[in-house]
Length: 205
Image 1 (cartoon, helix red, strand yellow):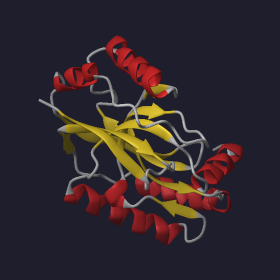
Image 2 (tube, rainbow, N blue to C red; image 1 turned 180 degrees about the vertical axis):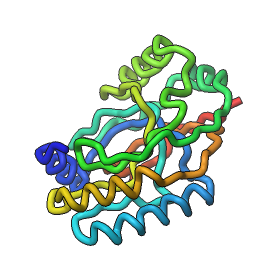
Image 3 (cartoon, helix red, strand yellow; image 1 turned 180 degrees about the horizontal axis):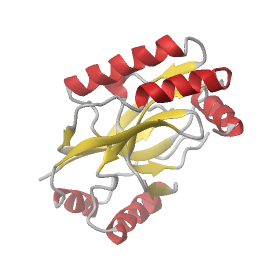
């Protein structure tokens, strides 16, 4: 774990950040929300101070990550119609969860299985991100591995004993699989996407 990265993430979560992202699975199915909430409560029993937990109803899987900025984006531009046609060719998929882990920046993330989706090729995925980046003037990139962020450890919680106990807990925890049948293009105003406006919804066929 990188304490500098933990501090940087903690600071970013506390301030307004703006960007465009494509997400899936929000809102999550009820059983998934219940499982996440149960896990968060167990983690909170271990780490009683220095823990930022994501509202389970707002947890999501990021498909495209828009680079965040301290300056608002121009959201008056509608996404190009070619995007709707591209997303409509993508079929729904059922995602499981490969693993839950504490990453180098203190984020507790549940990684999906399959880890890369929904595009059949990286070439197609990068072509779509180029269109979005050009449209909104921000760098939007493909997630190399798909995950859902469940919470974040703050610097004061990065103690070896607490991390060891938390890893032991999440290493054996399971979350129910989820079927993704739509994607949402969001304009977010904070890194947890608590404040986020839906630009467009793409139903999968």
